[in-house]
Image 1: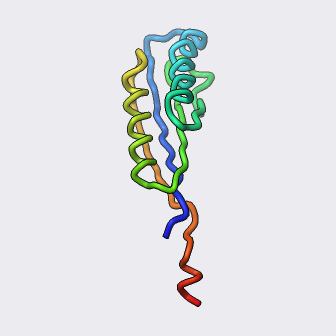
Image 2: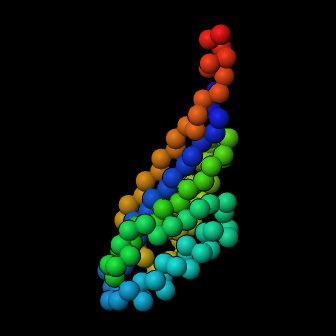
Length: 108
């Protein structure tokens, strides 16, 4: 039996019309901050911080319920896609098992 699940969502956003970092941050930062408030997630800007036309956002959550992790990450992905004037170019979800409990006890 799994102790819990760690879910990670990575999203690559593209904004080819943006010409400077300040303009890009004005598009991305509000979405990142609203995600933190709206959902029980940890959110970070991971890559593309010095590029003016793209960025990768990472989102993570933890629970003992696989379905809850999966649904929360899906809601976060939908929220990201609907909130900004950018294009979601790539999206990836990984859910990992966090420890197994009870297997050692069964062997005894």
